[in-house]
Amino acid sequence: MSSTTKTGFASIDKPWEQLLPVENYDQEYCKRTVYDMLLQSPHLHKESTALSFYGTTISTATMLEKIDEAAQAYYNLGVRKNDIVFMMCLNTPEMIYSLYGLNKIGAITEWFRPTGMSTEMLHDLMVESGTKTLVIVDLLDDLIAESMKDTAVEHVIVQSVKTSLPTGKKMAYSLSKKTPKPHKEVWDDRFLSWKTFIKKYKAPVADVAVPYEHNKTSMIVHTGGTTGPVKRVEMTDYNANSVVYQTTKSPLDVQETDSFCQLVPPMVAYSLEGIHLARFYGLNTHLIATYDRDAFVDIMLDTQANHYFTVPAFIKTLIDNPKLEGKDLSFVKSIYHGGEAIALEDDNAVDQVLADHGAKVKTTNGYGQNEEFGCFAFNLDLPEYPKEYGTCGIPLPGNVYTIIDPDTKEELPYGTKEDGSHYVGDLYVSGPTVMKGYTGRDADRNAETFLELNGMRFANTDDQAYIDELGKLWFVARNKRIVRSQGGAKIFTNVLENILNDMEEVDECCVVAAPHPVKEKVASCHIVLKEAIRALPEEEMKKVAESVIERLDQRTARMYTYYIPGSYEFLSEPLARTIFGKIDFLKLEQKNQKLYEENGRKELPRVRYS
Image 1 (cartoon, rainbow, N blue to C red):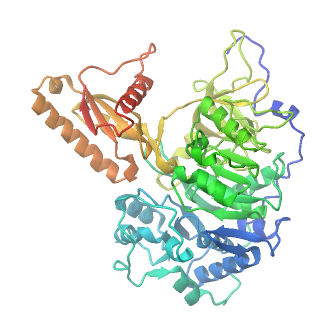
Image 2: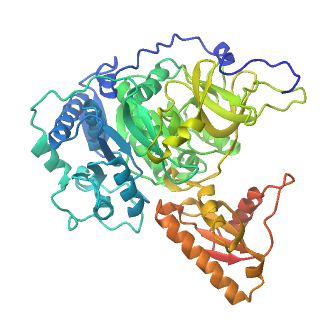
Image 3: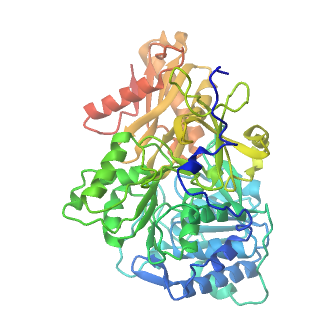
């Protein structure tokens, strides 16, 4: 430890409290079910509009009626407390009804990204969880019919964006081009359309509501794993409710007459957070079923929603967009974004676009992970605390974070050393939104994830960061690098590197991001084969390389399909190193970017030899 005087620990001292009014944070307020949090909201007005879905508007009273119908129907179907129901949906009204209806009867909802999934991965997760009920979007018919073979699945409730849309409305989303068109040839008596499901099972026969139980798992969300593509994260009603309550204690400009645009599909905690927050505040929620970032400007101009939760890939489309010429954006009151990095110049440019078009706000970058139910800290822009670019801001009320020395496991001071450098270490977080823990095959990771400090339970984020003198969080690096592809898909590079390094033909490798004209980023594998193989005649060496590609493609196809690498480069020389002797992955990314620009921003060649 440096001999410099330490200014305090983030888990004890909270210097950010001098920036904002200190609010009493009632730890008991959130101890209720998610369903009851909605019913007991002070902002609940049954006559107000709750949901807008491509021309169809649904009142709060109707929404509550539909939630109760869904709860009864699931109960009559046989779903009970602690049963796991797989949710593979998009932003539809039926998804809202299912979320709260299943919570009402005490079931556990497990949320999936409904694209890029393999039959093998889905099958294994169904077997592991023992789920008997699936709720899917119609385009997954064929995939589900195949993956649920030899599982305990008894019922598949099929939601259809196509049938929910008013006649003549254009579909606003698409899945993988490889996904078969929806059809009912694969249906057996386990498949039920939403309409048939409700009609057949909604009749009330019992009081189905399950009372609040502290620490009971109510949701399972997925996060990209450091030892595989999926880790299952357990969340409680208390976790979900706390992030809503935190916003009531934050200086956020949310009015009951405002509207909210639900862009992020319900596949991660961040999107569920937005859904639940909007329902608590009684906001008219525009449900948008799209993964197309280029549609963001059209969506803003069409809905004129006041509040947005999205990712940087969407908001960056505001920059130099001709569709905004002469348009007024003064209706925008907030745009919260996270889940991926944004360059400082892009963050500045987006804020300038908003200002040029009449908006009186700047975007708000947040820090959080699925393990923290979405947003843990916000870079707020307030008169007494103006937005500072590059920081992740300060924690939401009730949250604290600290920096841990990875070697000693002791807390590091916030502030700067005498030489002006910062105390960089592993970021640990604590608060009411932090997960209950990992479940299933990853449950044994909990022992190494959680740390008890000063009477609080902290979780390791696997991120490196530092905290400045005012308690603001500054992200430095991800301990495990990620390639973020279209729609927020996460590719953990070490997953691919571990597979490659297990191949006897491979001497060393590095997986980095490569730009892509449609997917934004794909995985790019840079491989050095064993010296003896590199010495072979060119045709023989290429046959070995092709074998390596084939085996990796086969392995990744059994995970998420977006893990399949977009390009391979086989090098004749060892990989470049930094001055610290580590592989210089930034140089490889820069090389990919240069080639992309030189090729007219076209997709990189699938295989190349250097």
